[in-house]
Length: 455
Image: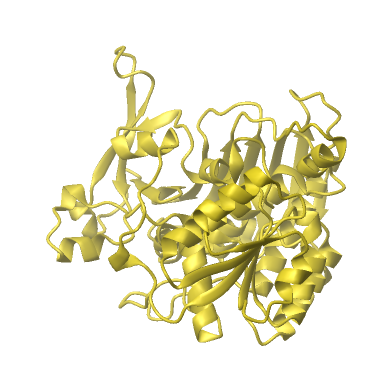
């Protein structure tokens, strides 16, 4: 999934985890992220080192350009030598070459794949165009990073995943949440039963944006608006919800067993066949359920993932996370050193604010920061490396090594951290998202059959 309205994929994914906060935390940094403030680039000392990887990027829409920007921040390891978009224009080309000045621009992706000097490719085209490009890239012996979902149908996603599993090269789906150090940190708390008995999960994506492009030529406009058609796109759940549902499945170490969905087109009466508002209930073994809500009609409270247990709840917003403990929960020991953030609803300045509780900040690199002498109250997550940056960094490390690498460095508490996502994770997430979208479109309950997940 790549091309968007002027909101772009960055806002699209930022909405998953750092949108405008209805119940806002009293933190300047969170407020800045909620308003879309630009994040600083990683310092040279933090950039990836090792052998350079020659890269081709296929798809020059907003997501493709965002990938190019992230690659430019990774450092000299990322050598973008070719960029392809069949609808390239002087303006697009100028934007691309400003970020990747050494790259040649081509209109046919097969020309890019035919360049033997290119080792890895990023597929950032519309979802319904992924399959043939991915199959050709794998056959050409390239390492492949393919945006999620893998495809808009199960059969096409299966074809990609089967080819990727059989290949000797690296294949990574764009499930960037699995590479986000903050999400990996929260995973530890969920898996260690710090929340007590798991009760439920909730997630939402709220962003008032039409998803619609306007372009002078009809052909190009139809191409740009592929997400509005259910024939080309699995809708809000397929393009956004896939990430949040996958995070829940990853944390619970389980695959959903059924999903019930609802959908309506409530605001944009422009002929689109993909609804602007969807809800679904995702059922997991043990009667644990995830409630998901997404809309393009209103931005209130942005996006987040929430995991609720009998002892505590954890809220995840991109590179920020907080734990809210129950009054009768025991002390965990480490929490006395953690930063505390008040959760407020209403307008504090007008005197109508109400404190709902205090969140314990869960910071991915807190131990390292404290060891370097940082004061406990000022410890915070490094926001210079976005989720996309971290996913790209993991992919390039895998390219250097020739196999999937751990998503984070091993530690005393996690000697065998999970690997960056591969073909199977991408396929399972895609199947669940497609079927959840099907349930939403039909207003029905779909029981997920085991054979749908067979490669």
